[in-house]
Length: 123
Image (cartoon, rainbow, N blue to C red):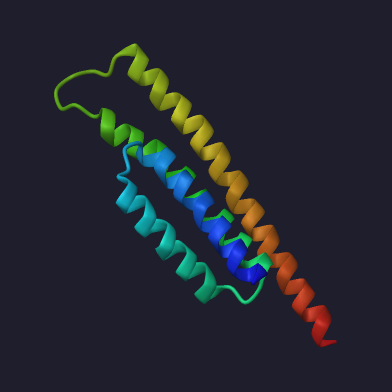
């Protein structure tokens, strides 16, 4: 029961992150994404720590995609970006890369901690 609850909470976190990255996300697509992520987390995760390790890894990937998507959205062929657009791009690059590094490092730490726990349990 706790694993399912954590998988649902993790899928909500990933869905909110996806919604923040993409901007306009229809409610039906958000619901489908939340169900798909919850199913993936339940399938790939034998324990609660693994659920949150995968959740933070997905958050890191979303954070990494945020600056790329911002640049694609603002790209207009044949015109120079305005100062406001350049400010938006630099902000998304700085915060996107910073948060991607943070979440992926956090995920790595959880996976590594879990691996150490499994090794200690086998001894």
